[in-house]
Length: 284
Image (cartoon, rainbow, N blue to C red; front, side):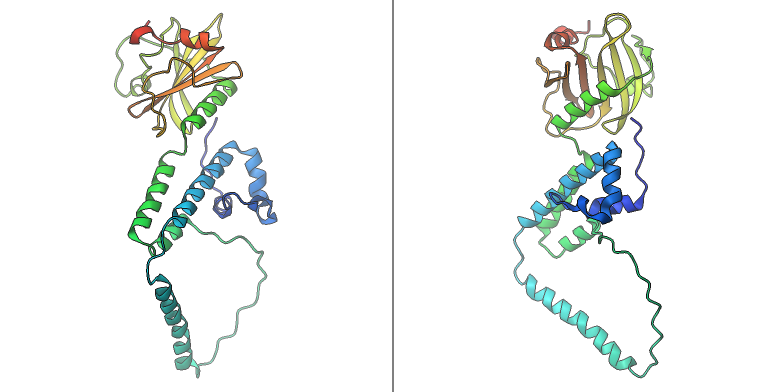
C-alpha cells in the first residue's frame, strides 16, 4: 500500500468538522469528503482515528467540573469587549464612514474548530483539565492502533499484498544501518531454509522489514512483519502459544520487544502457526 500524505486542505478541514457519532457526512457540503472516504482507505483510517480522538476530548471536557466564578468572569469579559467598540464609535462618529465593500455571495461551508483552538479554550478550565486533554491528544497522536486493530490490519495486509521476491536471509553479521539489523528477525520464529527478507512501506503506516517463510513449492507459508511501533494494550513479549486471530484460513499473532512490534501471519490453522515457532526459544 502506498501511503501518501493527504495535502488537500479542504479535505483536512472537512475531516475536523465531522462530529463523532453524528450524521455530518450526509450534509451536501461534505459530499466530496464522503466520496473520497469510500475510495481512499488511508483517508478512511485517518477519519476513524480523528473520530476516536474527538470522542475522547468530548468525554474529557464533560468530566471536568466548572471552576467557581467562571460564568461571572466570562460575563465580565464579554461586557468589556462590547464596550470597546461603543467607545471607539463615540470618538470617530464625526469621521466620514468609508464606502462599504461590494457584497459577494459566498457558499456556506462548515466552521472549522481546530484542536489548537480546543486547547486554547481549555485554558479557561482548571489546570488539571488542560493536562488531561493534552495527554489524550498525545497518546492518540502517538499511536492510533490497539491490539485488535493491529491484528486485523496485518491479516488484511498479508492477504492483499503481492510482494516481489526478497533476499535470502544471511547468517552473517551485517552493519547496524542494514535493514535486517534495524528490524531484526525474532528469535521466537523458526528460520526455515530459504527464508527471505524485504523492505516494506505502509504496514500500519510505517516502514520496516518483512521476513517470508517458505511453503510448498515457491509459495510463502508465513510472513513476519517488523516495524517500530508501541501498542499500549499489547502485553505479549513473545508469540503466544495460540494465535490471537484466526480467520479466512490465516492465523495472526503480535508481540512487543522494546520499541519493535512483531506480527506473524501464517497461512492455515493452528498447526501451521505452531510449525513457524522456534522451540524453547532456540532458532531452528
